[in-house]
Image (cartoon, rainbow, N blue to C red; front, side, top):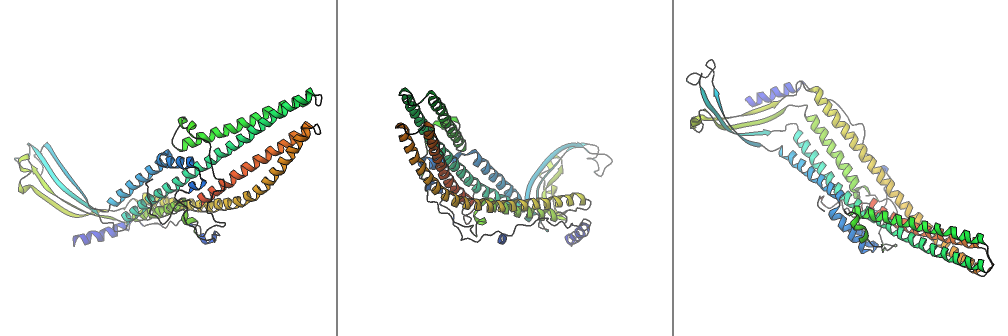
Length: 470
């Protein structure tokens, strides 16, 4: 009966603080309006990068997934979220404690304790086992648990996104390294051709067929070729440094990474249109959506704080004046009853917390919408770029074939004295430009295919249980 009266009083007093209406200002984007109408997709192979046919790349990615500082940070956040989830879950269980103390004190002669205790010094001791249990009438603890679990799930999805991003970053950097080596080859070949042209020009001057002006022109073109080679070597070194960093190493790793041996026509199975289930295969999108769920639960918990909080408390133990009486049977004490927290004069803080929780929900929804729209754009970009590069490679190969034939003819005519040095240099420049274009286009096409695979979620399987393990 007393508990019933206590609860009734709590409801009445709790009405002194009214929950406010604070609706979210934003809403999640409607997926049916995003143009996702292609066939469904399946996750890529767990080690999709092996399709590029380079064992060194395979080893670098496997090494990075074991020891990357970036991935270690993400895994640490998962452990932190797991601890918070465990802590939130423990709040629903009864809590047991044991307290004991002994105090040497003088009792007042004019208090409720009569002589011989009053006016004298005695040890006063107490030892109790205590229990408290939050009954969670309004679902606050349940909402906090849901929030913590959603944050844990989001952090586990972050691990999948981090793994995917790390494998992608190494693959992209490895493609940069491959392209740099190809550019070194072109620049080296150009340097050899320029040296040959300089030697030939000197022979023609000695034979009276050319002048010193042609020698100066040939001498000026040789440093240009050397600069092109040095630039390509610099790009190669930058790519090496980046690969070492991504795998968790320093300068000691540079010399251990050799020239890539990639299969440029790698068989990566990719769609031609935006798949209908694109968003379900992107761990970053799912993580953003899960954070909306976490913010929603946090808002519910803030709303529940407007209502009275009811706990059950109980204790049992002993209490006595004098150490020899503490374990006496007559010193037994016990008790049980409800404990209330009434937010009577706390309206300003509660409303501020609720408003802040609603703002957090708005921010989470806006972040989710931004992630979704970026996913659509990124995937569309890579699909378009793949078609674009394929068409350009065909044209670039035809240009290179024609430029190479023109250069061979110009060189033969120059050696026979039927053409000028400028014609040879112009033809050579056209060949060089065509080779560079073809190398860049081949590299970019493969890069776009890798990027598209990453934009589609790579090997992430939404049906697999989330895990923070590597």
